[in-house]
Length: 215
Ligand code: GDP
Image 1 (cartoon, helix red, strand yellow):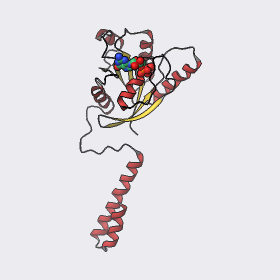
Image 2 (cartoon, helix red, strand yellow; image 1 turned 180 degrees about the vertical axis):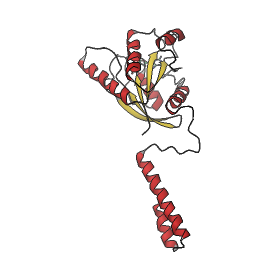
Image 3 (cartoon, helix red, strand yellow; image 1 turned 90 degrees about the vertical axis):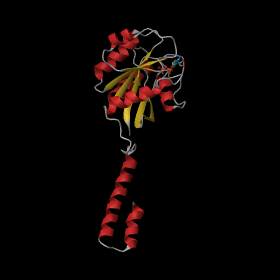
Image 4 (tube, helix red, strand yellow; image 1 turned 135 degrees about the vertical axis):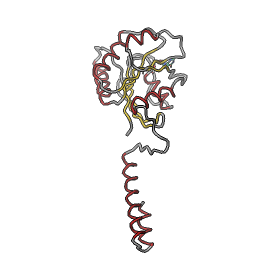
């Protein structure tokens, strides 16, 4: 079912836009009001040849609003389940307390890989490399523009590299994205193995054709 990615960050950094850009479709609702993505939206996408389940989360910020608080709890659950957390920042604004909290919360509770995604690279750059280094030394960072589609390939490459390590999926390896497909392929294989036995033992061709048809 793919590697799980949790997209986190304070409201308005562009998490939903990033999810949409990665899916190349309008699924999540993009709004200009902070804190409106209150539920976790999950979508499947193939990035760099690898299947991913992407969860756009409500954002991690300290809030008194009870509905938003449920969203924050769900975000934490999504992060716990993930193989990779993409912490999204807004490169056109200085780092805020909410950014620091979001990143620290992920670093504290999460055992998987973390990738910092600095969004809005199409706007004048305010967030500097020094800020990033001080905030999260050693955490890999990519700059993207979800709106313009900039940097998305590099983002996919980094995501694949972080979850699979240095070995890229070889082009002749078969990657099966669904459990149902895996089962079907295994059944086909065992039918082919039986066909081989049928052939080797000299059984009539109509028996062979039964095995082959099953495969
Ligand atoms: P979320 O709250 O983190 O999910 O953020 P949204 O995806 O709703 O985006 C918040 C605002 O930032 C919206 O007005 C988007 O149009 C805008 N936005 C998102 N990504 C970009 C980007 O790459 N460049 C620019 N200039 N604006 C963006």
